[in-house]
Length: 181
Image (cartoon, rainbow, N blue to C red; front, side):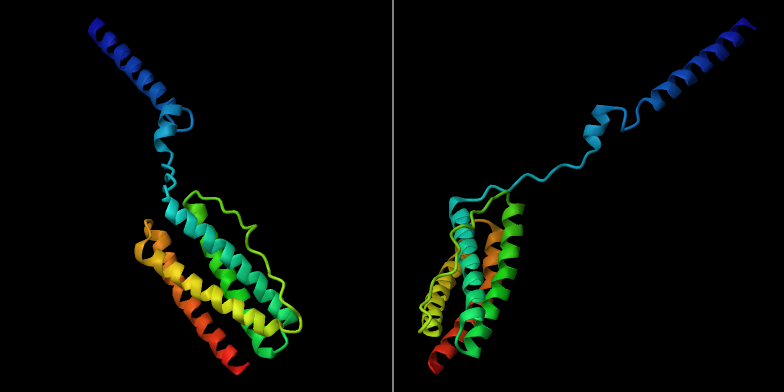
């Protein structure tokens, strides 16, 4: 009988202890479990100086192209230049947004103060705008091609390669417009 009482008491004690332990092991109450249950934060990818330089250069060029495009929409003398300006503003705005998201993902801040609209003379606005736009796009295509071929970060390389066809289409549009002038 004593043995039965001791066994029942021991069993009750075990159940009470297990129940108490179970109650205190919820994730919200236990900082050790809470830490283990939190999803791991992805570490920011370390970019090479070459990739950082490309991103900053592309960002400033893109901001400048948007500003020049908006200026062409307002001050362009011909409908064609206004149309090209609209393409520049829209396409480069989209590319800029993609690049900003990529830079943020990589933990890189960008200084966009270098991309500003240029002052083109009113009398020859269309010719100067197209001339500068052609030179910019020729230089940008070389830079983007180099990054797409030999960049260090796979995501940055992929973005450069993805953006190249748009830059080449812009260059063809600009050259066509310059032939007509």
